[in-house]
Amino acid sequence: MATKKKTSTPKKTGTRAPARKKTAAKPKSKSAAPRAPARKKAPAKKKARVVAPPPPPAENAHAKALAHRIGQLLLDKKAQDVVILDMRGMTSYADYIVIASGEADRQVSAMAEHVQIQLKQGSDAVRALSTEGMETGQWVLLDYDEVVAHLFLGDVRAFYDLDGLWADAPREKLS
Image (cartoon, rainbow, N blue to C red; front, top):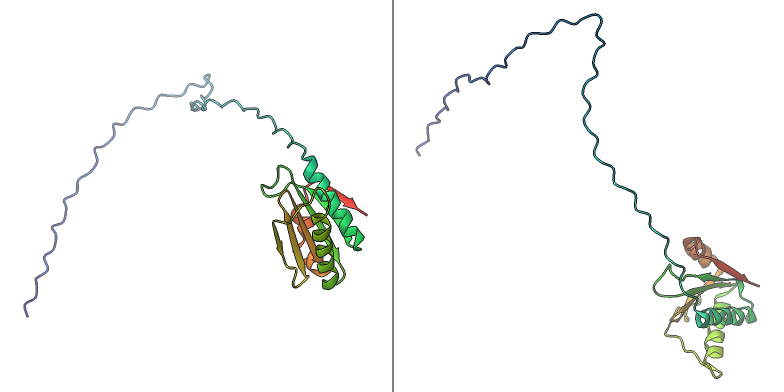
């Protein structure tokens, strides 16, 4: 088998950059103060634009009344620590969130069932768009479009801490 012979590249001859011209240093006079180096001109600052805060969201009387009705129905079934969070302008899926807890999974399921049954009755009947967790009773979610209710078992509520997640939302505690 034939091997290729390595060829070396020729060395470059030293090419230098052109030398700078040296200027003669001016003698410093004792009477002249030393000059500060020239400063670069700072870029022009942009004027701060004043932005007005967004207007508060419009009051939704129907959703607020529904949230309070759900809260009262939960209190009828001995729910603990019932809180209504005003979520207008903070979320796109609800105007109000109702959070409550129960002592046992059977109580949480009973609270959810009581709310559903009572809201279906009467002249202004309302049906939940969606429900989750009715079988286990650990965390039940009732979605009434503008109002969402979260019903928790006490330990589960402390674990998920929705109250802390929405700590900046205005709240109303029902008792």
